[in-house]
Image (cartoon, rainbow, N blue to C red; front, top):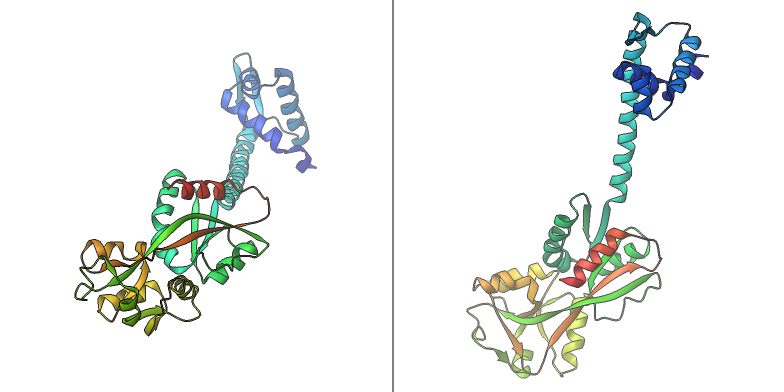
Length: 300
């Protein structure tokens, strides 16, 4: 029977009366009438068959039974508040999380400063970045495992009907050489000379390598590939060892060029610009965090 008497509502009224020291002040605090407060306390006393307050014209004072109930009520209400806060924190954490997937070069070189800027604007947001091959970025966004995907485009293979691909900017690619290479002080190299030079490439099944070959083929340029490597970072360190020449996006070698550790030049008559593609689910589910990150990318 007591479970129907000791409701959270009545315990809240009871502790407010204790805190305020009178039914009248408790009623004002609770935005209730004094008679309604008195009725709730009376029902509590009748149900528990105890007297909780000694009443006087100057206010109320807890009886010994009231003291014991007050101790229990404080613990109960504190536990309820803690549970509510925990659930609110859990809900907030779930809402305030943005999952991003990107291909390796973009994840390593492009996204960290953007993520830092985003977190400065949204300090309560948890960002997650997963580096994946382009095919996995595509499937992950399409299947809802990621909110956003970022990949280098230009290969006409981002045609999954479950996603929307948007070009957000272009990145320039340059010929890169070691400072001891004969081309280090040149601004341009001829297509003929470039075709004869030992070239450090990505693997033949790499989208980057396919894109490079397609772009160069438009100018009747073929590559003299001597070494195939698996990432922009690996190629960069091979260039630092003066193993040959390569083509890399400017963002991967900006620091080394500034330090004089690598040098860049162009092929005569060839401009290599590759789009950065932003992948989003085609569904219309609202996602304010995703929209905010997209807006940041578009503005920078």
